[in-house]
Image (cartoon, rainbow, N blue to C red; front, side):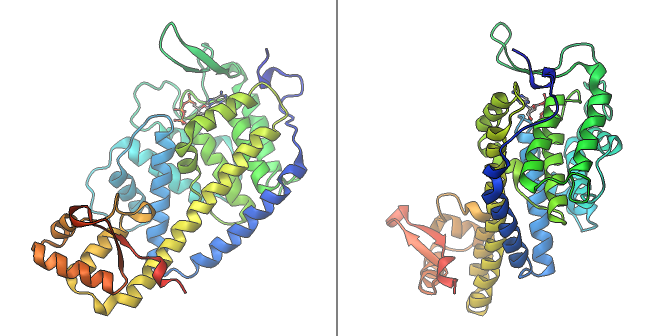
Length: 371
Ligand SMILES: Nc1ncnc2c1ncn2[C@@H]1O[C@H](COP(=O)(O)OP(=O)(O)OP(=O)(O)O)[C@@H](O)[C@H]1O
């Protein structure tokens, strides 16, 4: 059976456009909501959110292929590139590279795609990799480029990409398609369809020796930013990573045909889910600001410190809730003071309490401050 790029109509992808009208309009509406909420944040909160979401994306896009990077180094590197103070010392090359690529993607979203941009991203991603022969250029190896899984003897080939000598013409075609389908191009496409085709089209060519998934996800985010007319902080890689198997399965079902409605459906759902996460992050920050506005002068220094620490855990919250022991260790106080402080926080509606005796746990009571 042939791969998609071996079919006579390659790369003319087909799909049922009408199947995406509702999702496209949901995407645009939610983008408007996001923008509206974002305006409620002050400058320092906006910066914190930007750094947090960008480093999470950099972390997760690497994790998809099993590369586990250091979160603090990523954050530090991103902060540094935005000219913000950092505490971290030397940043390892892998973290530095992906952080630089993430910032470049954010800052140059408007620019047309080109070989040069892709080469730059690739060389950044390959920073510190001595095993890569073709860094910052398309692959040249005469060996087949395959996506495989399993150990030797039980290897399964999920996909084989076009041979290396086709890379430059294939990529010229891809780049031309990407720029032509931009909102200001000759054949504009809607956001979700364009972003989804861009990803599948790019990973089907698989032009680099390594890093194709990461560059492919960056391309999809660039497409979304261009269609929205502003840089997105969409948690795409985070959402893909959370259901990594679905991602591989969706690609595998799509790579032998040019009818891509099913793939686009998977990808559009993923983008909407990613966008919903970003909205929750913004809402969380707004809620946090309201929470402290409301309670600020009623809190003692220990209570304030512990609540700040709980909020630092983000949307996922303090795993399993906060215990009295956690309070004692964060506030550096005695058991009796912790008991009194915690009781007071529950009475003030700042925390809710679950469990009894040594299983007692405390959770941020965000809902109680919603108007
Ligand atoms: N069946 C498939 N058909 C086409 N593309 C696939 C398939 N399965 C996986 N892929 C893509 O190939 C990528 C892996 O490509 P590659 O071998 O270059 O590793 P990588 O570049 O290190 O990946 P990543 O950037 O995600 O870490 C996946 O992330 C995915 O985007």
